[in-house]
Image (cartoon, rainbow, N blue to C red; front, side, top):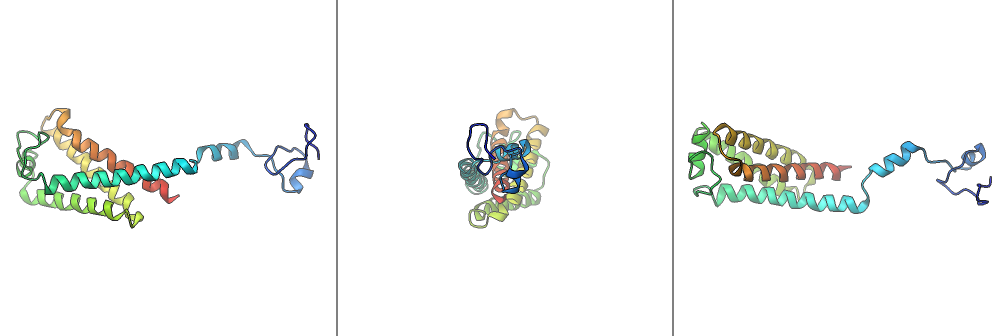
Length: 173
């Protein structure tokens, strides 16, 4: 078959006749074109991969810094009138044991995010878990009537861990 411009159809070009279809040439359907357009390019996938890894390290580093370097310090972001982690959890109505359980879980999730640099399958569950804990932290700031500024670190880690989880899901496909 000859196309309207006089050329012979190549694979993927529009061709209406059974002759073309019989020779392996097929017209791309609108659905196939939309599917290809919806898939990220190789470059976009690489960018998302790097953004996800930066988010992983950022969220993990933030949590480890708070629980190991700033535990006994007044940061200006503590809930209520608290000046350290123990006072902050007391403001929220938690016991010291509950504080340590939350801390151990957050540190474990942060370490899992770092391990995810070498074992990618742990990133998505760790990111989702940390995002859930940070949503709880935001809720605690709201509970005690804190200004939005005091929720900024929790909002940031929520965003970073969510991005890490989403980027890990993108990398699976």
